[in-house]
Length: 513
Image (cartoon, rainbow, N blue to C red):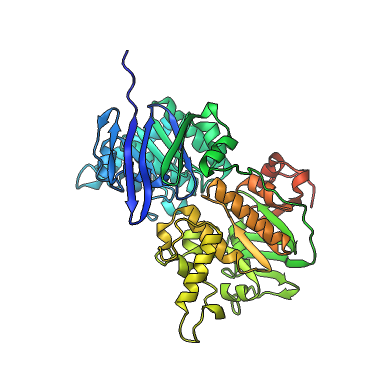
């Protein structure tokens, strides 16, 4: 009996971008009908390798075999023709098109669109039923949540008859419930004989859903093991090259005076929807208040108000002095001058200017700092460059090149640039949204250490995260938000994920914090 050919085999793949060797002589075999995980630190070369397989990049050396047959993949059309589909970390959807139009886009049957749409509608219904990928074909992309958008990306690949599906950090923007639903879908795809490559930094996901896992480090494939024969601690050590603490190590908080006091905060959007409803809380110097909640329940608006991007009614006091909420006398710049630093939830749209260099991005928002000024008219570029280099070295940004555009760093290294810029300002209050979204295990450990160090230095920290284990591990107190309201507060030692999950769904036992 002949051996089954791998669904995918990469042999000796190498790829360099100038002096940076992204992939070095990589070989990997992925068997058909399996879920194969690929893990590694940010910048390890995972996404580059998969972009070569999908035809986005051309390898400098190496060969690709699909089902045992040598295959040349010069572009994504060739990859699709070879039965490969890819769901990128940042979705490739046209926001003002419908679901149906996005699925058909690039796969039309001819010049006339109507027959293609009619055929796609019928096929979409069949695919949705077969793989539990239910989504309204007439919904506009910008009007649906990220979980639904991801389903559209998967449907796009299946509509193009993909047998091999690559998913790059698929749960980075999903709630826990959406992630569970995605894994059920992937399990269903596997049962139907599809081959799935899962790029993720989340060890729990690797352990829960994959059959085999390959580990990359600094552009090389260092090992491949059966998932059943490894552990999270083992994988973390293989990824980073040292033992990694998989829990937050911190001493009990020693809260002092109140730094931030929020009273009866309310926001009504342009459609008349109440986004924040009478939100009140305080944070003391030397403590972390974690805000738990399913994305879309007012946490983003809370950060925007406190960061100076959104108007509101109510009262906010910083060190006992009122902050303007009308927008007439305040913005992000004035908030920074008052000692508020902000790591926004969306690093690419709110935290960075992607076409600008890392050095420029480390100075944004603080460019009036005298150390960046040569005189009142000119910036001191040498000072900005040196400061950026020091930040990148301290925060282990890879590659450590301050002249590289932000768009050329991996997502996790982009996050490190933003975190370094804000934490290094020694603020009285740090607002931090989703601090480790899309960040690898080694960098998560480092960012957590920096947040705790800031707390221990007597600073107040407001943490917003959809990762419950992150909220439980970092917070000294936890406030749960649902539908724009604070449902209650809990101490991490006196609650669990089940109780917090119920509160996140709007269910309480009648207690008040």
